[in-house]
Image 1 (cartoon, rainbow, N blue to C red):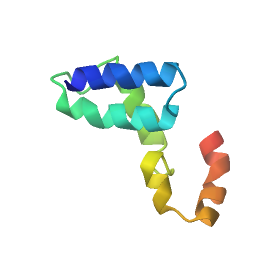
Image 2: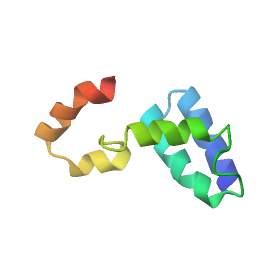
Image 3: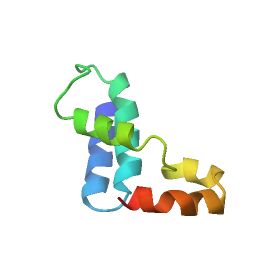
Length: 79
């Protein structure tokens, strides 16, 4: 079931139906529930994106940030 969720998220990212940062973060978290090597070459890019953006307001977490804080992080998030 989790593998199917990873595939669905990847398809949504490619179709631009979900933000790449949000989708990558979700996939990175799901990889721990899959029976794959921690360094799986297909999942590692998502883990790297999540690692590089873990200080940014991604997905539903952004709702917990103030407008001012979101504005300050916007240039970094766009990058």
